[in-house]
Length: 288
Image (tube, rainbow, N blue to C red):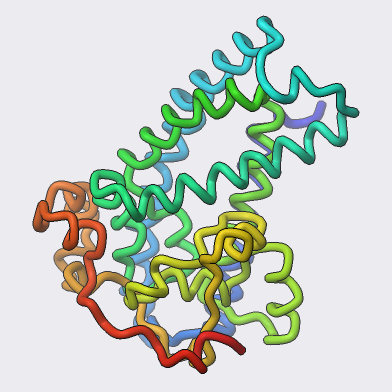
């Protein structure tokens, strides 16, 4: 008997996580933890614990909410995919594209709306980005994303199978793009014409404001080009990750990350940009 789709997707994600952890260990792009195995294990354990909480929520409450919405929409024949007469394959392609477009704009909103940024900055506050950072999201952000996705599912007329396919594809790419690895430059350049690569996403995790506010895509990379938020830089090895006001060891502990959205200044400037106003790289460093 074949495994249920959710179980199969979890197995794929876990297998990819193990493979990327091994790759990072054998050939890290940045030597964050060279000779400091205990520190790395502590760092990754905290991030994966956050991910475990979110995985439990997504597999229960979020999945139930999305399933209920999809059933209501299907019963009413409501939404774009129900109104268009499409083949099954075309329907799935359109569903993935629409969900990815939504995720691009949701990500931008998480950077622009102060309350959303307070939760999203937990993800950006990691000063040593590796594959475990792909799991480092605050539960509050996951809950907000799950609720806001309900009207998106309704308007698009999505089924649970569309959402599951997108989630499996997106999270595979999300793990790769956060990993502390470097693809051969030519390969990365070719791949980032289609998907978000480690090169692209490392720039998004820079502590430079102009770079943090770029490269928002989750799965496909072209939305950043379409909406003018795509960015490159020449000195990728010199990039600094994290947020300046959350760099201390104490602020990287599990409890501190849970409380992070409720810490710091309440002014919009400091909440939306939790980094000093550093200058962006010179224009000739924006492109390779």
